[in-house]
Image (cartoon, rainbow, N blue to C red; front, side, top):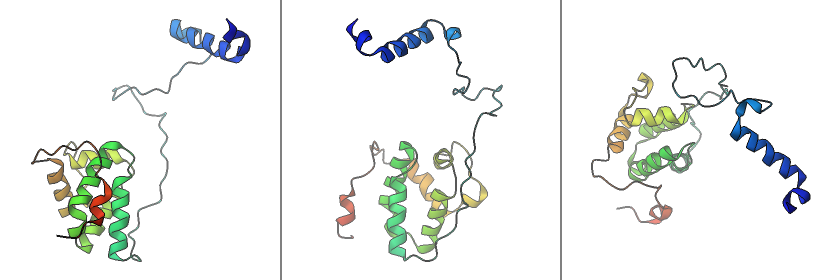
Length: 166
């Protein structure tokens, strides 16, 4: 009871939350903008599309700067699955890629506005658009199959960056 006397706002909030648990119809506002899954009745009219600037190839950076940027961008994604997949892929392949392959990889990870698209294309859950069907996508798909059954639970440590090339 002392909590109610000291924190009257907290007590009101607690009472409101109890009402929501007991009967959602008693609440003043109801939550209509919730995740509903892939329901056939979902018109998705409540979704907001945030416009992004179009992807542009960077022609003003050195190949080493591009590799460093792509390594960073492979590690810092919008979702953990892609952070792991792309950072491990970058660790294995980035140093051996040609400039053309680096440009294809740059476009692949930076042009799509939805990270789930990249994940679905890499895991072959959905077909990739024709523009992304190239040698880098083939490498990524092959890598995503994890034929060696490696444990891939987190992004790699960065110590490998300081190792001497083989």
